[in-house]
Image (cartoon, rainbow, N blue to C red):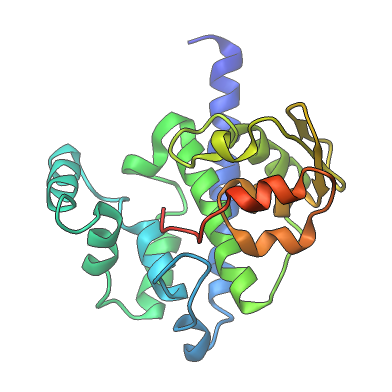
Length: 218
């Protein structure tokens, strides 16, 4: 590993910790009704989203194998949500605060998984509750740079042949008809969240919108 790679991973991990800290602080302000509100992810409430985010933290290799094996019948992500369903919102927050430093699967790639998933799901919650935030620019631009090539999120096929350009941070990607708007909205559109399209414009907007399906839980 080169020194630059090591420094890059450290930055990802520190950003992941900051994102989790911000999310935990926000969750502490929510009412019981808000916890039960449907999120932008299909069939998941705000509480389910939080359960999903922390459900991989303490799994060892055997636990992961068992989770995915069970997921042949019930999707692996849903298995994790179900395993944490009995926890109260207060217990979920306590678990998250005890895992501000990502562990297990979410610590993969120097914290990249925790950072990318954490930011997207944080916005899944905030958008559905109508409580926007200004994502720190350095954190947002780092995640924007990671998403187009992430095969699990499927962003590549959604934005193929388009140029995305943020209007509030220094980030652009691709060539073709432009889609412009706030970086957070571009991120959420790349992740398949149709709700973000209202914040975007440009000649490529219709193409991108047509490629989006209702957000699946991931």
